[in-house]
Image (cartoon, rainbow, N blue to C red):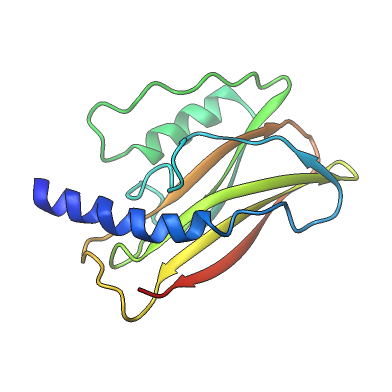
Length: 165
């Protein structure tokens, strides 16, 4: 099990390092927003989560955040403590890729912008190319970030890239 976990982490790091090199400013016009990703290194918050289907995640209150946190860390017997979020001025956004048959995909939130009360956040989804060797394990990557709160619409702008090994 330890060897398998180590290979999964290595495969995800290879995919995510390439994905992180594609970080950029948001693609939508408007005011750039400060984001705080909930994971410091350039990989998804969790490579295996309870998000079986692709989803754009928008959490505007502590109760919804607690439910999402439980789903993100569904496979962990001791999930880490939830980060503090001031929902009067902040909210949490995220992207879930859904179930994947192997460890070939990563997702990283890269930026956000606001225009006319609506927020667009950007995420890069990086998939390993056909020449890459990846671990055969079911994954469901998800990434979350804290952004300024809005009562307006929130949209995810996904950029898909392929990493060639």
